[in-house]
Amino acid sequence: MKVPKYIRTFMGDEFRAVEGVNAHFILTKFSEPDFRPVENVVGCYVISAIEKNIEYPKGKSPILYIGLSKHLLTRLKHDHYRDNLKKLLDNPEYGLRGSLISMMQDKYQYMYYLGAKVDVFYCKGTQSAKEFESRLIANFYYKYRSMPVGNGARSFSQR
Image (tube, rainbow, N blue to C red; front, side):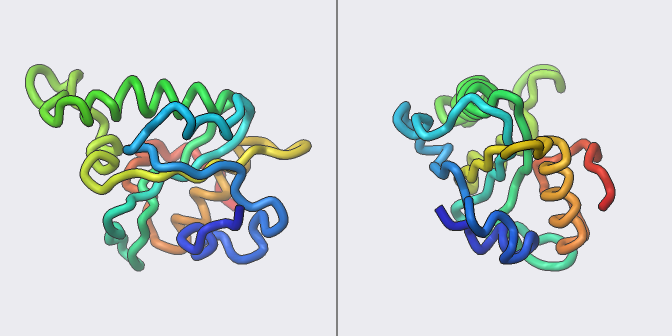
C-alpha cells in the first residue's frame, strides 16, 4: 500500500517508497477482521483524523498520534481500541465524571470526535522502532512546529 499523502507531506516521497504501509484500517469503525493484516511484530503506527485536519502552528494535518510498539496487534487492538476508545464509543460520557485520574487521555477524545484511521509500518531488518518513531515525530515537528496533539511525551531523538 502506498504511503498516504498526509504522511508523505512531512516525511517526503522517498520515505518507505518501496514497502509503503503494511496495514491500514478505520479504528473507530472497528471489526475483528480489521486487525487480521496487523501482525504482532515491532513497528510504528500513525493515527489520523477522518473528519477534518487539525490546526498546527505551521499548517493543518489530520495526524493525531504517532506511536510504536513491540507488539503492534496487542497495542492497537487492546490498549488503543478495547481499553480506551471503545469505552467512549459505548458511552460518550465515559471519563467525564469523578476524579481526574478517570479522565480519558485527550487523544481518545480526538479519535472519538474526529474519527480515527491507522497506518501501520513494520520495522525491517535492523531498523529500531524507537528510531523510526523518533524520525516520524521529529519530521512532523519540524514541518508543523508542534508535536501531534495526542503525543504528550517528548521522548523522540533529535535528528
